[in-house]
Length: 111
Image (cartoon, rainbow, N blue to C red; front, side, top):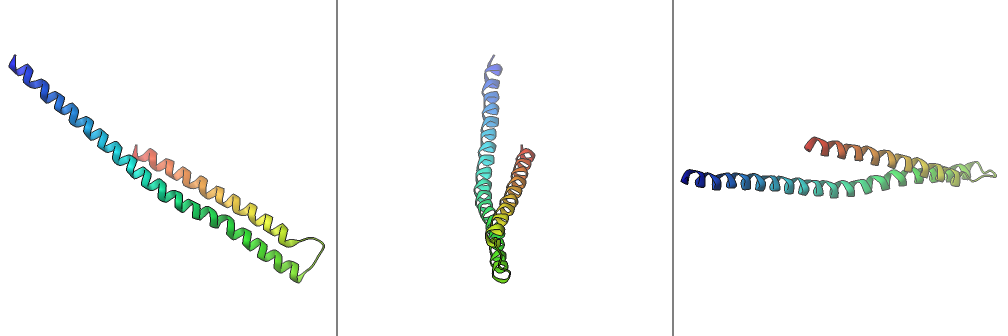
């Protein structure tokens, strides 16, 4: 009867040890995910900003040049600015979508 009594604390310690290990693994995974999310988010903000700003400014600059050298009844500056903005938004959407898929793929690989 004393053997049965002694086996129970060992079994409880094994369960406790496994549970602590599982909780530690979950905590490490959450910390890793938070760090990646913060840096990924900051990088994505810069990428989105430049992806929209560069084509918009290039379109405006080209429009100003065309309006200066070939004046007409329509404003090339405004037209190319809007076209550059649309291209920039499409480009930013493409990058964000691609990064989102990559993040989800990495999360699925870690699980």
